[in-house]
Image (cartoon, rainbow, N blue to C red):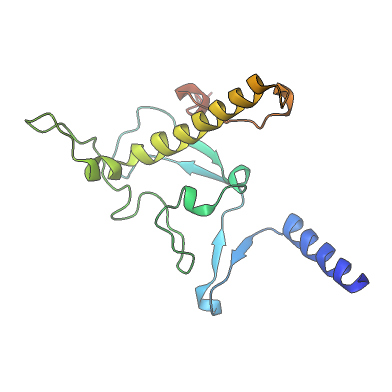
Amino acid sequence: MYKISLGVFCLVLAVILGNAMVVTGSSDADQMCIPMGRILLEPLEGVEAKRTPVDFNHPTHFGFKCQRCHHKWENDEPIVGCKTNDCHDVAEAPQKSKSGVIDKDLAARYYKTAYHGLCIGCHKEMQIQNNALEISGRVIKENLPNTGPTGCIQCHVKEE
């Protein structure tokens, strides 16, 4: 029992104090490092930014499944960023056709869709859940999780 407890303690300590988290595949060549710090979310190359880049705190999102954001990841291949080919690689918002319809596949590939739809959508969903818990009286407001930003200026902080 002592050995098991010591082993669990060492494992927890290694995760807490480790500088990088590694998800391993079948060999060393399959290793993949997960960014443990902040990631700067910027527009696609060649796109002029209208707002400041977003300083995304990756570790605060480790409580969620990776696939929540990396929706095409299959667990056995390296994780890639949003702006890779065939994911969110479209630089301009798709326009409505003459019949007034927007191509949904193209709209999903528009890079801002990933950031705004997924990020803000998730934060607003959490806000709704928090409101429901607060109204129910089961949880006091101070004990509810932080929902994260849901507005432009909360993410796009002006540079000083």
